[in-house]
Image (cartoon, rainbow, N blue to C red; front, side):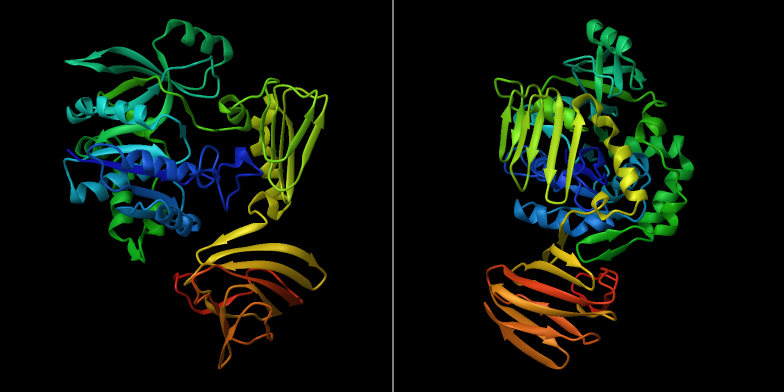
Amino acid sequence: MNIHPVILSGGSGTRLWPLSRDALPKQFLKFHGDHSLLQATALRCAGLTGSTAPTILANNEHRFLIAQQLHEIDVKARDIILEPVGRNTAPALAIAALSIGAQDPAALMLILPSDHLIADAAAFRHEVLAAVPAAEAGHLVTFGIRPRWAETGYGYIACGKNLPNDDACFVVSQFIEKPEAARAERFLAEGNYFWNSGMFLFPVKAFIAEIERLQPQLMAACRQALAEGQRDLDFTRLSLSALERCPSISVDYAVLEHTALAAVHPVDYEWSDLGSWKALWDVGQKDTDGNVTHGETVLEDVHDSYVYAESRLVTAIGVEGIVVVETPDAILVSNRESVQHVRTLVDKLKAQKRAEGVIHRKVHRPWGTYESVDTGDRFQVKRITVNPGSKLSMQMHHHRAEHWIVVRGTARVTRGEDVVMLTENESTFIPLGVKHRLENPGRIPLELIEVQSGTYLGEDDIVRFEDTYNRA
């Protein structure tokens, strides 16, 4: 019996803006301990008896972030499957099942969102193994979290009778959408209703058969998307044209609410989907005034609040039940009970074409990072960090020239036909229209200051002639 972890990493996490943004969503951030949520998910699976290398499903923009974060924890993925367009969980899992089933038809598929917080990894692994007999018997097992309060932001699963010869799993009586408060209170009191966690253990063969029976159009599109996909470095790129023909639908609606094979395994460990700043306050370590803080904060007469400081001192006086989140380029202030509207706020930022709605000041690239330091009329200053052994593409710009000053490490610079080596306190100038490339041949990060000048300084003014990372 092999358990194949399937980690879903396609979300944007906009409800945790300004910390989580499209370019760097919450699964890549560290909210608890030394690892990001994605890394913690992969490590929980790595310690599971019978577990194989994980299969990751993600969008194209995050492919190098995923590869880098897995490399940092010494986990090698079985595959990283790139979805050119989002189509919800049913198509994603159908593609994962087809990919895994081609190698191991008898496999069990452990499906996990990449952005959940589970502090007790041993308890998680114990409960997964407890659900294995039901999955091996052909059931599509979902993990239900025993509710700790009457939550209205989660869907619920109603338990029916025990499965035959299985005390750990139950027949699913009903899937219930997010309830109103009074109904959630009743679910909590009755005791046989569980939060729908979005975590599953499916036998690959049974899942493929059920989705083929219930969603034949979806399955045909998924087969074609995988068959017409292409390998790109360590990734599998699915066919855009095939996936665009696939309906967008969750696995709950597509399969679980219509199959006789659905089962639920109730679990009682601490769990959160970290769906809002209130959720982070709920699970955070509180001081004597009920506050959860991060970074440099000084509070006076503040109670039951969440205060996050990333880059500077944050102070507050005489408030209660609020959320304050500070980043270098944006600050969020909200009543704790109103943070579910953060997504609406982010939509407004995007409608105004504000970069803060999508990217951070520090932008991650496969070769390292760059951070905007200052900008003005016809100039921009960036701090660039290039990882050891990495290099940018061979490129040129139509509208800007660049001046590079090395502050740490060694740079190999290609400028037209010339190749020069620069060390600390040395600089070079790249005229407009000249082909150039920046490399770090050393063993420590290369840090430099880049001063751009010209009529247009947008990131789309890049013509690439050759690129290690196969970017257009």
